[in-house]
Length: 437
Image 1 (spheres, rainbow, N blue to C red):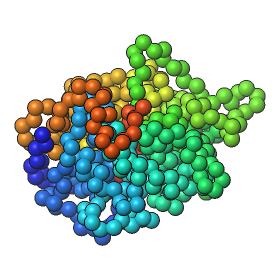
Image 2 (image 1 turned 180 degrees about the vertical axis):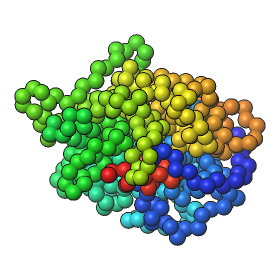
Image 3 (image 1 turned 90 degrees about the vertical axis):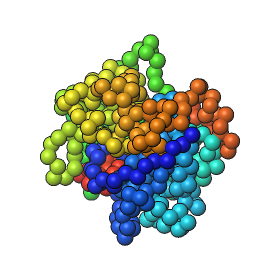
Image 4 (image 1 turned 180 degrees about the horizontal axis):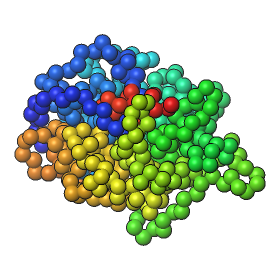
């Protein structure tokens, strides 16, 4: 059963490593006039005690994904809260304090928040109607080039488009078949248009840009981690390769064959392979971690971005390449556990990346991440039969299907993490826009 969460002091919002989410913070810009919730006013079913105005839906979605992917059943109240955040038209805002108040479609609803919520609710099951409305909203917001921006009508970017691709995969739909009404472009068309090709510097080939900057593409590691995952047709959670499967070699762009690289004809899988080859090289050149890219920020390790890279490498079947940055994450030098402390989205990101690359979330550098995540959610501070703070462990994957009384969606991949990527305050938003430079 669900125990009510004891009131926690509302901590000052911490910039959690700009790479943990795939969306940008227009939510903050759009809702600056919204009073900051007090500790006592925070929803009891919400994960985390920080200001939820910028990332409430995002962090809730990642928390549910991490628990479900680890074989745990998230508290029903937490699932109900996330589903209840949906706007009447099917989209999701970053956070709605008063759900009776209509959403602002152009400014208050976000592709990343909607796509993350769809992935989470499709994974846990029993919310088929909510998932269906969310998918329909995403389809209506598709740009002519086949992609998505942060808000309806905003220019397509790699992070938002990638998170939406993951939502379609979670709902059992082939992203390649979702084409724009004008032009007939698919999400992959928009995504691959942002990938640097053979005309780029050798050490940037295969990387993705967040968006074009004055008509030019500039390599962005955070956009690349998101795009690589999506180009494989996967979301934040996916089936982990069996240990007996052969490690897939890295395959950078073939730029030395004389004919050059035909970007327009590039297949998503080839684009994903080139992106992971770029990431692996970038990690190797920097001690197996990525550095933060915020303007004015001192050169320092980016724990969230490195976790994203691990996830992308694992999704491509590059187990050996993923193991190296994972080793850095679990070591003392990274300080990953301290960085993620009491932050549900950060903890979830480490859980999902570690799970994909073969780490035990119960012993991540000596820390039980599932317990730490559970302690940020409903029931924190009260006795629980499960050390993770969830209702119970699932006996089998069939539990999820049996509870899908809304008709739900068969999740063949089982989820994935991220949209709101590279976001400063909280996770859902602000940093990413700056990182494109």
